[in-house]
Amino acid sequence: MTSKTLVRAFLLGFALLAGAPAPAAANDAFDALLRKLQPNRLPDGFASANGRLESEQVEIATKIPGRIAEVLVKEGDQVDQGQVLARMDVSELQAQLQGAQAVERRSEQAQALAEAVIVQRESERKLAEQEMERVEALHAKGFATTELLDQRRSVLLVSEAALNAAKASRNDAIAAIDAAKADSARIQSLLDDMELKAPRRGRIEYKLAQAGEVLGAGSRVLTLIDLTDVYMTVFVPSSVAARLAYNDDARLILDAIPQYVVPAKVSFIASEAQFTPKTVETREEREKLMFRVKLTLPPDLLRKYESAVKTGVRGVGFMRTDSAKSWPDFLAVKLPQ
Image (cartoon, rainbow, N blue to C red; front, side, top):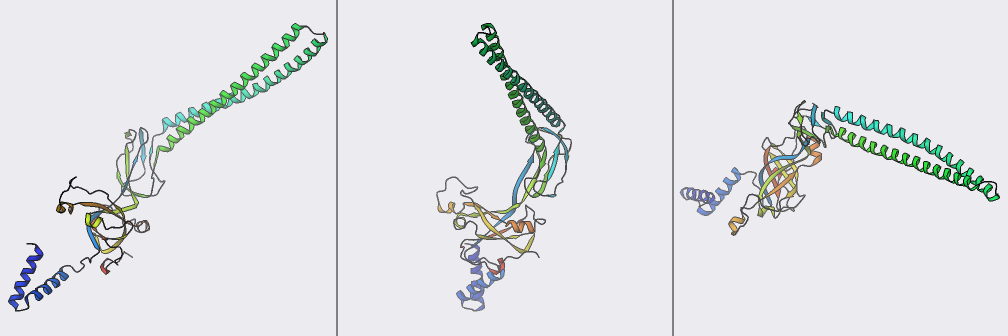
């Protein structure tokens, strides 16, 4: 016998003793008692479930091994996107950057020298071509020997080879400059990563390392709570989850501030049941299937009240299983002024 049946039986006996019409009096008394004990009873088309506020967490970690030079924030601080949160020791990387920049300058000088040599070799080749042409003309008229003509041809070939070598030296210098620039850019990128910045606006939840500690690659320094993505996680039976609609309105009442009703949206409905057997054979077991649902707070509301937003706060989430139904008065949105 259920508790509801027991209550009805008790009220029925009370009505019989009082001489009232038994069934009608008992039912009326029972309904009146329920209304008194549950003044905000949910009407049909609505469901509720307990949950707690959560948010996405971002782990601020090192990219490469190194020593922490300073941590600029403390737990509870609110930070903006792009704000520097911690700095790593960069003395070794700065030395590497200076070395790469020195190689770049040396390569630029080598390029300048190669350009000057090219001008010289081009002049030598032009002179060799002119002398070759004169000797060829004299040789055609019989005023120059074949030996002299061969000499001028050899000088021309040597000048062309010297010019090609000078051009190759210039190309080597240009390639060395590009390599030095790429190395400098790589080191500069590492230097930039040695400043740990907030990827989004949020609040520092945990400070996991102190200045002076030596950390490996990927070691966590800070944990950031994303204040732009706060939600309540609730678990509902399959009969409720099947009738929820994505992006439908929801309501939250938090235990710490029960006088307020916070608006939310149904942003996620799990496709698989949680903490249930893999195979369910009976209808009774199917009713025990619980699905995870996320009720997300609007970003503009979070920005307005972000100083008061705290994760871990428990409360009750209210959802509509019939999106055509209007919210009851006691679940009308009510926020602090």
